Image (cartoon, rainbow, N blue to C red; front, side, top):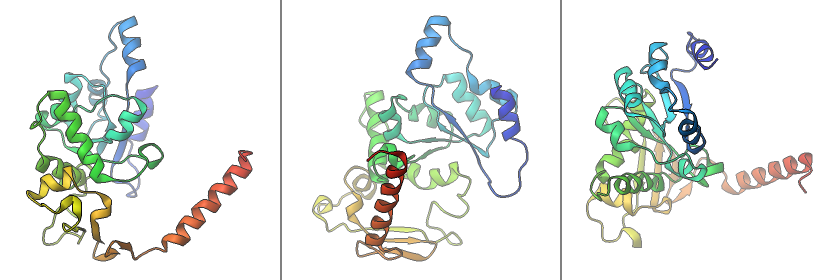
Length: 248
């Protein structure tokens, strides 16, 4: 059934979505069933045989994978995306960042959904992925800050297939900028930039945000939306949902 569904979703579609996504979240329950009934066959090699792995497919989470599956993803050029906070929160397990990178798989980072992660703090996501990998390898230098910063920028864009437009500061690409105020207390002794951004920076340090040349945040304040109005509308919407659901 899974392969039939996969073949159907892989069929050509109009040029609306340029990248397909596959969620792979095998965790504790699957591991237990495999131990009780014998190791289940890895999924990704089977998907590769069905031509369901490709550069325009992104595997999300891909936590409980075997070396064979990692090789299958690498061979097909299929990127993966990790969202460490939600993967920890739900109990999916620890992302095997080092193994994927060593195999040549493109790795991007994501906050997934704020309903699980609690916020959209990419600084925290970078720090989490670094700490998890260094802890797994018992080596505090295994995943350096500069490499983590790449995963959150150009590698993330590459995993989405949009690295020709965003992900790095280059002539011809969109003007996407995040300017961090290094005069804040937590960044006052500013040393190596990548190290400080990954291990010390916080959203409150962001002074200016530019997306495709549009200033969306300046001097620490949002410029494109009315924050108070947005919060009020969100609160009202939640109240209506709770009322309809009888959750008062």
